[in-house]
Image 1 (cartoon, rainbow, N blue to C red):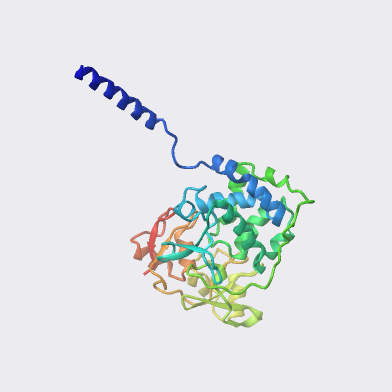
Image 2: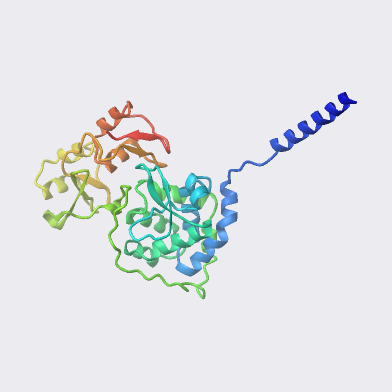
Length: 320
């Protein structure tokens, strides 16, 4: 009898193990994420005029389609940090610096709604609302240009997600009769300084030659390249040798600056003003050396890497 009981118990254990083995993964797929949040993305589109394709693709990219630590612990799907004036809940997590402050929400829907408020109440995003609701490529490029992300490939990453999952079809559900029930109230933005380096952190320190605004990063002066700029033209504007511009920026002479690109007009430093950087999707070693005004060779040396090394998302790099 005891033997039979043991057989029965073993049978149930095997059945239970098989059941657990068949349980679905806790990770959300991109398809599941889209299905879960497409309705609120459409609702926000009709309330604020932000394309649903943009909202969803940003959520997928910024939150790892709902699987990131920030999304799970703080219900924050857009990587929005606390910023000056935030009075809501907060969540601390290591990012580019240790123990950085992120906004925390009661549920993902609050995160989606705050994302709409965030874009529609800051003047640097105002020009985006002049674009056609179906111009997802314009929105993707505009977000990067306005400083939402530092990753130079941010627009391409968003566009790839939108086109892979045909999210642009959701933008066709835009209802003009419902649009702008909460018309964006774009006011002059209060300059904020958060703990992460991004293009929105920099304020001009002076106006230089040719009415160029000069900025400072890690104690190194730089400008943002204009349309039609060349190394020669920039050098002429600042009365320095042409060869110095590509040298200061770890570029080749045959390269040319692109509009909006950070271009240093003096030598970068040997180390950063913070200890570490966590690699973002699409970033290269050169991107990071520009972001922190560190000489490319020194960044490689700090991390025992060669100039052709490929870095991967979330990799922790030393900056000093």
